[in-house]
Image 1: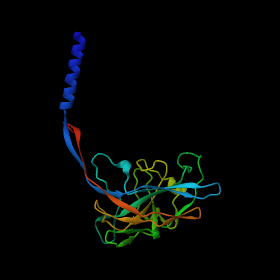
Image 2 (image 1 turned 90 degrees about the horizontal axis):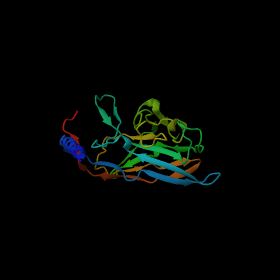
Image 3 (image 1 turned 180 degrees about the vertical axis):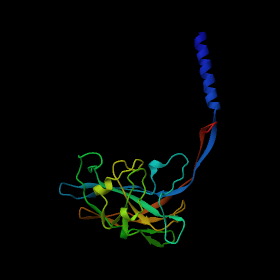
Length: 237
């Protein structure tokens, strides 16, 4: 019918105009290094059977990544006598017993099991075999926007520290690797981390309700450049 033909023609014109207003746009996300494995589970004996302990480890706030934004760590510090900031390498730890009550959301769930961690045992092994120890304190994370350490004295906690405490899990930012539980951070005084870094992070062990739990060495893996073609508006804002 004439009306249907006219409608189809109009839609085709609108579609062509829409496509014509967009351009293929080469996009590229640079290479980076990341942990080869991020999540670990451990079984520990308890009074009413075995409990599952979950440890999540991250180098970046993956929830904050988008499009071609490069993967970068988000903490730096200006040292005495210097006028510029140096990036500091860190690892994020999110530790909890499975089903643990979430202090920011509800009053139901499993009671927390103390998970004591001493950052003085943590160190990095570099490619050449040399080693670097972590700072002696554990640092709380941001509780507002992103996952990154609050690298200030008021947020430092003396080791050993209960990384499954309500203080930790009450601090959950909006854009985070885990929207249910908070995190702590270990900071290492080096700015050398890059895409080609082949490091091994040795965390040592945790004390879970009086039980020693050994943590496996955590290696970093190369993540290659990613390229793709995106469709961008001709008139970009």
